[in-house]
Amino acid sequence: MTEPKIRTNFESCYNYNKLKDEDLISGGREDPLFQYIKEDIPDLEYDFYQNIIDEGIETIEQWEDAYVCSIPTTINCEAQFVEQLIDDLGYLGDSDSDSDIPEFLTSHIDWQEVWDCELSHDYFALDDDSGTTHFFSRYF
Image (cartoon, rainbow, N blue to C red; front, top):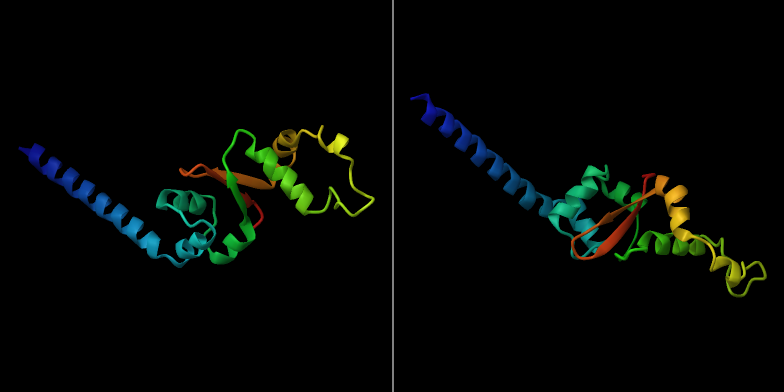
């Protein structure tokens, strides 16, 4: 006769966890950080938000320090990110400068290798369900 008691406890525990998860989901959408991130990622889903939290980004200040950009997910999106980052930082020069690295050289840079060997230690990427990859600095 103890079987119904165990089942009742299991159902009680299951219902508690289900309610707890629903509270977290609805609570997360009201969270100021969730709302703030939606300004940068308008189609933010709770699961992706939880991935951000799991990476340790828990405050608006940490978000501002960590978030770099979002680009469409492709097979070489890390390489695209690296090339854009290096250009934004001025290492490739600008078109008006004599210090530009010639295109015949930059076209042979393996940007994916730069990501894999150098920058993946300083940045990380998270893919969402909408086909977008979001890049973050590890230093926040």
